[in-house]
Amino acid sequence: MSKMYSSNLTLEQWELIELFISPATSRDRHPKVEVWNVLNAIFYLLTQGCTWRDLFGNSPP
Image (cartoon, helix red, strand yellow):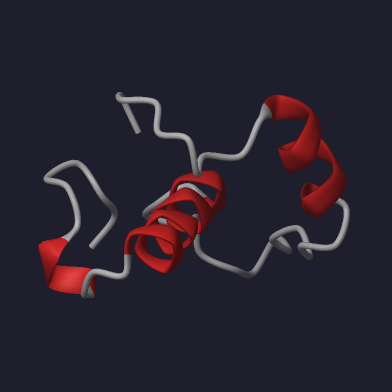
């Protein structure tokens, strides 16, 4: 995400949450989007009350 929103995770918050997200194994595909960006988009959606398709242009698909 290029723009900062008040709902975005801080680096410290991300480091705490990242511990609970399982790392990709060698047989898994590489993710097409970063989980941090997906979480930021979800938190933005929850705080702004908009629909997924009304998210900002640089949000993950």
